[in-house]
Image 1 (cartoon, rainbow, N blue to C red):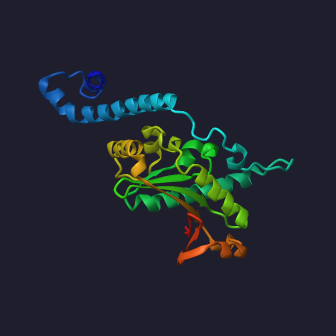
Image 2: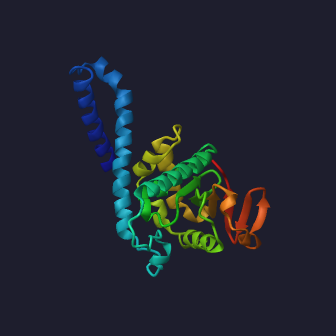
Image 3: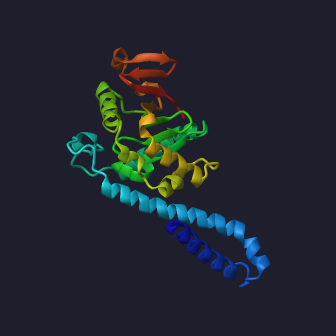
Amino acid sequence: MQKIKTFLIIWIIILLINQLAIFGGCFTFKCILNAIPHTVGISIVIFYAFFDKQKNKKIESQRKPKYQHENKKSIQKVKPKNNYKQDTRHKSINQKKGDAYEKYIGKKFEEKDNIVIYNGFIKGYEDKGIDIIVLSKEHKVINLVQCKNWTRKPMILDDIKNIYYKLNVHYDNLDLYYLPTSEIYKHTQDDNLSFLELDDTLNDLRTNIDTYVIRKTLYVASENVIDLKIGKHLTMMQKNIYRYLEMKIVIEGM
């Protein structure tokens, strides 16, 4: 009942603003009838954004962190140890390359009717090694993805182990799936994804998390940067797709 009252209040406010700003203060039956479809649509979006935010706050206040003894140092972004001042222009170029690759891989998943949470863009350096989270409600699959658009820096076995560790630590960390729906929707590249569809998928995930299969995947932009010594630690699944323990490694250039 409270939700209905809240929605009606939001709709009445939107309707008043609409009639005053667009219809020149027209409040006749015909004017109001013409305004109902789009004002109701706008009200639904605002209503769900409001309650999603309130729900997430309530859930976060009730839940306890799952990894209280986690080695935070090992999963933080590595900061340079050098004392000299960094070349900020060089750093900016690398950041742009990384961002472009994350968007490229995310778009590939979206084109296959998956929902993509751009965790790296939402959280920045607090993403804890998970760039994107791919959700498939139809197939009940969650894919935790790290993207590496390296072209010069060699990728050695320690890099693979570090990436695997980060993804594995958050294998069943539900905190990843409680980002605000409105924030996730803001970063999507899928023009066909509706806010209500996204909210419905996230609610299903949070309610039925035990029915989902969780996968771990590393995407690398070029095989040329991978140290050949890593080969003996990998299992080849198909061309350009390998496996390290339970983590799939995909060579996918832009």
